[in-house]
Image (cartoon, rainbow, N blue to C red):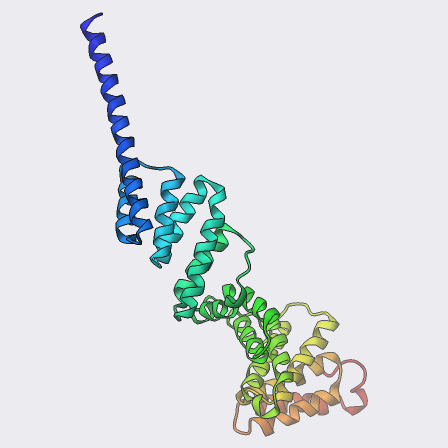
Length: 315
């Protein structure tokens, strides 16, 4: 046997011994970690498990030990990160991960820590999409709403409404607000109107403001289109009428009446259009719209004559 071959064999033996020593060291760290965990010494157990990881232990068993220990210690972010890693190595571990994380979510809710609750639920949903969150639906919705994440809040609000046994009007109003925040007035209006029907007349002041605002904005949006179908014009009239009916916001009532006059004139309802223009002065006595409304009124009344008011055109 040549000297070179002897060196090669010696090197291979050295590598084998080193690998065996490394595996023994990893197993020893995991074993010490298990012993510490059994005694309730979680900090010590975590240190041993993480030592095994640093020494090269990349198996799902070691990773899930780290995750579970973090979960026992209430460290949501770390537990979630290691559980995601463990489940990527062995899909069957997702169930244990979700069990631990949802427990952490409920504990965080009980402590009033909505951020930790949301973090735990988010990771659980990542591992098990479609997972039910039970009584946490409304707190999650309100957490995301308070964080300005209105789109994320809405699905949880919907679940909360489906499961609610009380305070439904309050939830309905919050759903309307969430839609309004993402500039979806069409859906917002549905929930504001629903809330309005649920409460007593003297409780409608705030929601009337939102109804009037959304209705007026939707009407203006329709009117801003380059081409408008007859049914869309009728829908714009219904919306602007609603803003006038609720009388809110007060500072846009003159605009709403003027817009109503414009829509009616476009529809050929000349007398009704004149009536709407005439009301502008009472809603905005000192405003700039009074002059415009009067000119529009005069154009219909004197420009073509009353005998022509029913020919389908007002101007």
